Image (cartoon, rainbow, N blue to C red; front, side, top):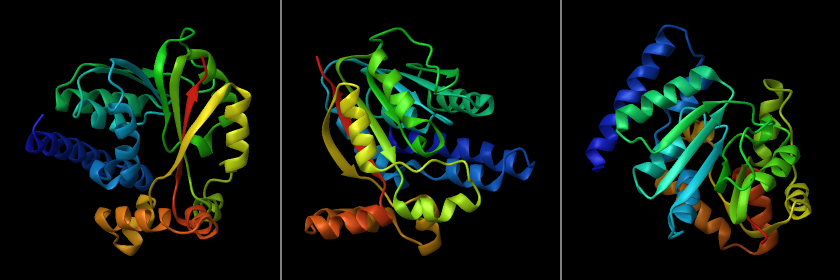
Length: 251
């Protein structure tokens, strides 16, 4: 797909969201989050780079897929992949299917389902992704289920929000769960995963909008933080950046 065709399809999808928001069928938080352009989501690029480097055909499960943004990102860059998106929200799945039609790819399937009761057979997937959903689920339980449905040497990527997110959100979302990096690493190791890498991800879209931060500046800030001494790096990453945990299932 050419860049112009991609942008036209995304523009058409955002027009659908505009209509839903103007008709009060989705709230502002949902509208703002899902209408954020994909190029403004550095975490998508970081995750997709890891996935797209794997040479063989892959089957990927996106838990909490929302409106299919990550599937769109992957399929517009690579055809040698099959994706399955799972989300409990029926309206999100309907819109993910619409987005797929607008972009003209058919290697993705979208299913309404509970992330805590994953309906797939053992060893079904090469890759499992949890993006921007960890705070709203029982992550340790999900990691345990992921270990069963991943193939040997399959990879799991979990995106976890920064400390500042938890300082602000509980006022509006008191049920959100705070996970520590240490707790996640221990949970991964307990279920047989080898932690390959942790990556700084992104400043959240709400912060980008508040401070008018362009994507190029966000990427530069991430590189600067990664170059700092470890103690300073930890302070900045805990406050401003999400962290992507990239783990591999042992043979």
